[in-house]
Amino acid sequence: QTENGSRRTLEKYFKSVPRAMLTIFRCSFGDCSTEQGTPIFEHVVESYGWFWSFFLCAFLFLMVVGISNVIGAIFLQSVLASGASLEQRKRDARLDCEVRWATNFMIFLRALLTRSQMSDL
Image (cartoon, rainbow, N blue to C red; front, side):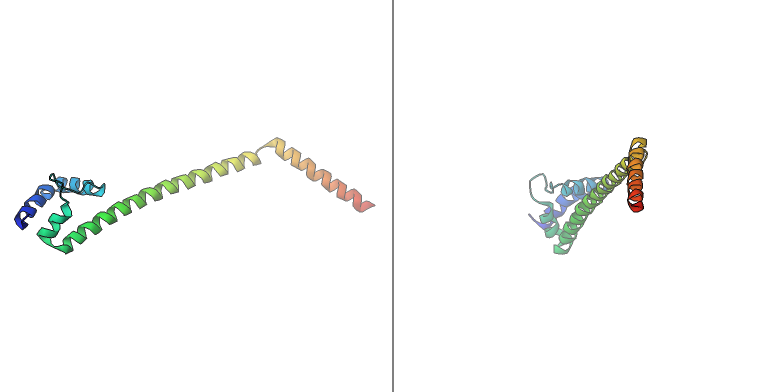
């Protein structure tokens, strides 16, 4: 295709901000081709050169990896906070258990009395 044909093809996909956003969205998920099935990057190279094609590739890569990283970090932070909260609730439940306190106090008291009686001998 000629340079003019490539520019007309690109104008169709980037003629307005909403249409350009839709095109970038499609490219982010792997559908970065024209209606004829040719890659949009090829039209960018023909019309504007390698620099702008590289810029578009780098932009898409950084956006996809960056957004995935942010989503993953938010998910991980939520999971870790939930785990810490659950662990704290379990610890509080163990410390508030009166039967556990009474049992452990009696064990401690018996050990103390036994040691006291042994030291008297």
